[in-house]
Image 1: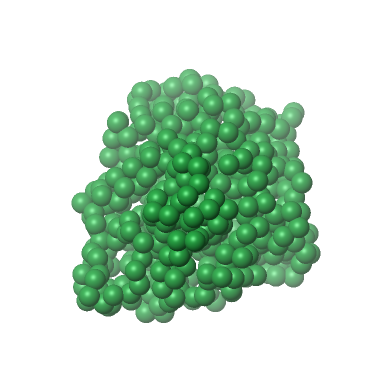
Image 2: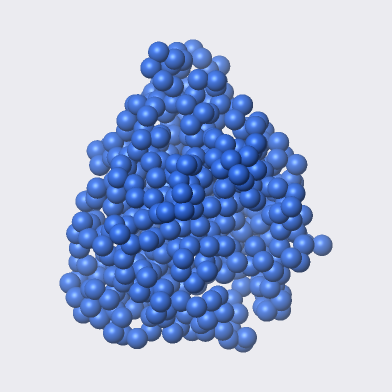
Length: 505
């Protein structure tokens, strides 16, 4: 299968949603059980596309004009919500609880329930593709293996993000803690007599890693044009595996896992498949070109994309409407606090160009991020080369236990780009850092600045035991840094699924 067809393939999304979508209570067994869906490459690919869409719905909300899914997509946002990067309006009572980790029945029945259900919706769809293609596929073996590999990547991504959200101190080295309910078979419909308990965090990590390792083998090496990077290839899976090992290995300083995070980040960087521009114009010209805050109610039609993009959710594909639901960054529910702006250096273009006023009619004096403040629809970046460079830098410091010159070079690439010509600060040198801890703090601060609102910051704080001393997270006890399991899951399983330790009354 050639990636030149990827955007065209995604146009089948509307058909997939029309035929197979309803609401969360509908048993997914009716979605892809018919062997006809998986018999041919064309129909199997449409099913796979539906799985990608479900991943987008879970992470960032998509598509907004299909089946009222616009209120989904909070998972990615939750990586900034309990931090100094993003503040909830007092009127948003359901979400104030997330910021303070003081949950009521309302949040359990709404936000937490939907995040949990939509995570498993992604997993169930991926399972259907994996098993359906294996059982019924009657097309080229190479293409079948790729489809299965993509579905395993999707399943791994969903389980990974769910583990960050709900795993009982999973990012704090608690491998024995309760993780997630592990579903690897197609969903057969609700059965009150067949509930599963949560497996350990360690078992969850193992399955996520296994899925990604197996996916890497059969994913294509080829890299599509930047505008078509909406599906996984080998580098994207390697990038996610690097992120997984980084998140898992940091808190316990597990050298083996950190070395693997370094290895996979290096493989992406050394592949030569992605470009890194040193121009500060990259932020506004290519990375976020469709997210202009002056946008009207029309759909954006971006024409320029950064070569550093690895994997993203598009807001529009050719002439077909494919919006996502990131419009909650329009300041109706949340806003970017002034303290987040002041955290950037005065001449840093990210301070003035990526954090902006946005809408002048909607809380006109408050700020939002240009990444998601389009009139209605925005691209959402899931992975890009800047993350890999910063991961490589951090893991080099950790694995060598030294103020690594090579790590500083990666840090300089990101930091220097953010300043206009003639205003660039002095490059960091080894002498600027007294010890490894000070260099790690500089790298983590750069991650905060560079990757803000892309689904990283909260997890960075958790895995490093709040090394940057984020005030919002500091007000929450570590055993509540993860979310509680929604009460509904506890009730219907009659206690088989246990609540996270920090929330047991």
